[in-house]
Amino acid sequence: MVNNTSLTPIKQQIIDGARLKKCNFIYPTIDIQQRNYPRLYPLGKIPCIGCKNMKDNNEHVGL
Image (cartoon, rainbow, N blue to C red; front, top):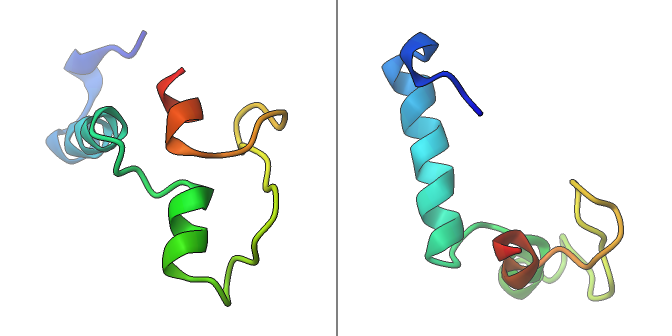
């Protein structure tokens, strides 16, 4: 658990922003990046950065 009393307001805003994006399914995961930037991110399975097992998408972030 993060000790919120030691965080600066900017760091707390970054953490809160990421949490809100994940809850609203707008976090820039690979499936969103592939949709928006097809030349930069070719289609195919790109694993999650955190677990390296599952495909990186908004459903997986919610788990």
